[in-house]
Amino acid sequence: MTAISDTLVPLHRAPPSEPRPHDWRWQLANSLSNADELARALALGDSERGGLDALGERGFPVAITPYYFGLIDPADPACPIRRQVVPRLEELERVPGDLADPLGEAAHEAAPNLIQRYPDRALLFATDRCAVYCRFCTRSRLVGAGGGARSLERLAPAFDYLRAHPEISDVIISGGDPLVMSTDRLARLVAAVRQVESVQTIRLATRVPVVLPQRITDELLAALRPYHPLWVMTHFNHPKELTAEAAVALNRLADAGFPVMNHSVLLRGVNDDADVLATLFRGLVRHRARPYYLLQADPVQGTGHLRTPLAVGIEIMRRLQGRLSGIALPKFIVDTPGGLGKVPVGPDYVIGRAAGVTRFCTHRGVEVDYVDPPAGDGDA
Image (cartoon, rainbow, N blue to C red; front, side):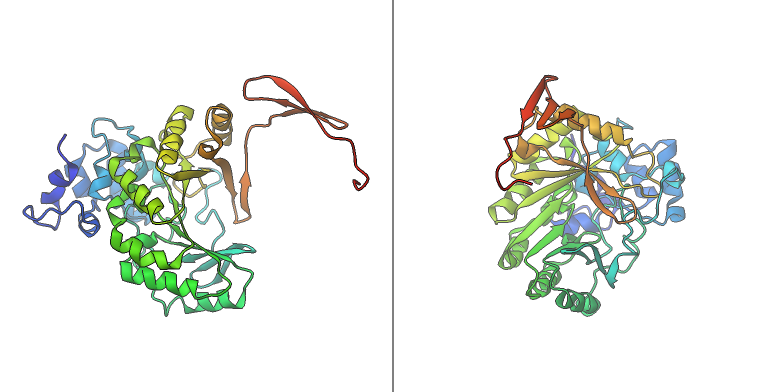
């Protein structure tokens, strides 16, 4: 199969004589970002063409790196990669439960570009740019809006707030995607967060290992390593994304001391299948990335066609329990609307309770009693 980076070079700014598909900057510069480019590279369906024509109505841009576009099966209109990144006309539909800001981030903005929804952690909005704009994005109201990376001066009120609230020990640097920033700018930002004495843990929320693995360079790792502990929170959603290039990126991160945790978003027609997710989760563990959350898709306006009923996720977790090692089995999480916090959801294995006895139904369908120990002298 011809590499997509080769077939797309004539459509973009880099001349055909200078393809550099292994350079992350080249990948960003040559992203597919409009209807004409996509139509020349892919046979679009009516819904996709309508979605591209209506991009201005939703106000949410399109961008797909040549690398990630190369994972699309052009002969399959239901390709799970395609469904994640190619706009569809259904994005203009509104269904019950849709919200522009499903996590209530505007209401929980503690300072400009700083969101606090929990007592001990906060999210720092570092940039509105992404390598790829996922059509189910929680922050589609904000990302790609043109502001770009936030300067340290612009983030000064956020740092003042962190210093004034030492109970915040965990900061998630997000956006947008902070890893599309230049290495120097990102390192200076991480250093500024690390200088807040009460911050113990810094997390980088990024989809770069999935859509732009070329970004995980020795230069990047060397620039960030002095600020450990740094955790990487990434977003693999389908086994097709676990390419050789992605595996190299994950292994580089692990070798450099960056724990990698993965959030998979449950998406209709992408990964709403227990066998697909089992393959994904086993593959992540093989490359030292921990499946952390399986997230019920947030009810973002225009994403009803990608969301599943809650019962689908619960049934998937029932099927995965007992089939996967504990290190490969994530929590199924609903991030409740309005910014009221994450709630774990799953099958109910408790089928009966009596005094001191709890009856379970195991994943094998076998019922078994668990008997509490006798009360001790100090028990209430």
